[in-house]
Amino acid sequence: MKVRNEQSDILIIGGGAAGCYAALTLGEEYPGLDVLLADKANIKRSGCLAAGVNALNAYITPGHTPQDYADYAKADAAGIVREDLLLSMSEGLNEVTAKLEKLGLVIQKNPDGSYASRGWRNIKINGENIKPILAKAVLDQSNVKVLNHINIVDYIVTDGQVRGAWGIDLNNEEIVIISANAVICATGGAAGLYQPNHPGTSRHKMWYSPFNTGAGYAMGLRAGAEMTTFEMRFIALRCKGTIAPTGTIAQGVGAPQVNSRGEKYQDKYGNTTAERLWAVVKENLAGHGPCYLGTRGITLEQAAALERAYLNMAPAQALFWRESGLNPRDYNVEIEGSEPYVVGGHTASGYWIGNDRSTTLPGLFAAGDVAGGCPQKYVTGSFVEGEIAARAAAAFARQAGKSGIDAEVQETIVKEVEAFLAGNSEGRYTVESLEEAMQQAMDEYAGGIKSHYGYSESSLKIARKHIERLARLSDELRAADFYGLLKIFELRERLLVCRALIAHLAARQETRWHAFGEHLDYPERREDFKVFINSRLEQGEVKIIRRPLIEQESKEAVG
Image 1 (cartoon, one colour):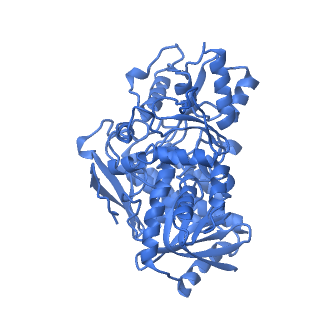
Image 2: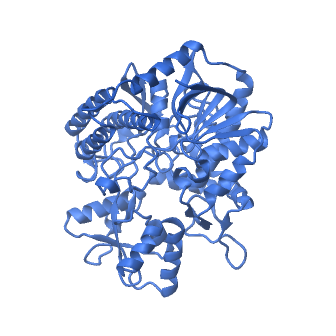
Image 3: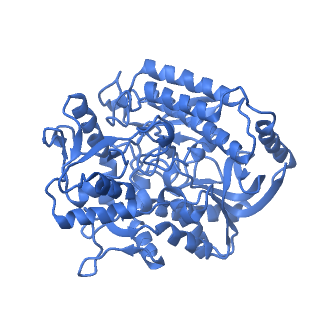
């Protein structure tokens, strides 16, 4: 078994929006620190920005303030947010936007030179190359070393402090053990937990990156970190079939949601992110579906603008319009809900952190989709969190001093990897079969598409039994090579996140966000559940912790 050792002052796990911006910050502001960024793919086209975006959904437009944005996000999440995190994120939105424009991102302008907005908190961009722009800026930093195609599996924790991480190098088929004075977790959220709309070979055609398996959450749980608000799932309202975004249509041309009768129904259900989805579910259940975005009758210019926008961001939708003839000027656009995800860039799920983005584990910081308590951060908010985490990690690393990895720890890691490579799994279950069973159990018993996102105490108990059984079966999986190892580790990450998610869904005995958390035994909001539902893995069990809402958390780390 080949083992490679690496050492740095700061290790960044994940090269998406938050991870790259953290590396850029450390490169520019802390040239004396050695930084190592490990990415599962290649930072030039990885993570949620891989295919580009056509708008920055978090920006403070003229006439508004960061507090306005924080207030909006708080209302959308029905109050379950950390206001301190929201405000510190919002205060940095425009600065990171200006930085990206300076790096080469094209932001659309009005005739007077101001940014072209889409609503009061979004601006339009030509963002198909946003990730290569960001990656180049990172690669230009002399003190930042990028390791592509390294799948980090777990943290290395000594005396209660995170002192590095280990993973597998997929190209060279070797174990990589990295020691670091501080670690920033900037991996993505969790996709692929539930059965999606499209089964079979199309099952990875989903809203969120299918390569984001909840690795950061799983590593945190295994290390004993406190996590928060997994039960606030995110379910995207999408264009049917292509899973393309709907905000571009709804906000771009002001298209309302309408049912098959042509009726506008949104006022009956509310207008938060969750309520817009829930309205579609209810209209369909009432026999008023399918549901649409009412684009029929938009101008030729608006239709052309929509096509350009989707070519930038989701070409499948533009191709669908051309190939089917169902263009948005003559036909309304049909919509549907996706399967549920756990993703802290949209909801409040993730690590329980301080305002400096430190986790409850000394030496570990979190930013972006894995950082909890701060929903609606999107791309620019993830940049800001990467910047905040970078500065805090730099301060920690300078005080922590150098540390190595004990030979005993390395030996344990090698044995764990070798166990999955020993023998074969012929005649046993496969990763794919266990993954399908996991998605089916979550779909049927933990509030997936099939149950219209609803679940009950009894159904969650069944889901838990299935997931625990599948986790035990995953111990028997064997891999023929390192790619097989990757698939085993990904499945085990998802299964652990499922366990935590089920525990969170069961613990919040109310329905605070329709569809996102639809508890059929408790269909109303309850005042006594205006709290954070947190958790920690203790001796193999998910322990639930209730924490009160705190409007202004301490500026210091919470760990």
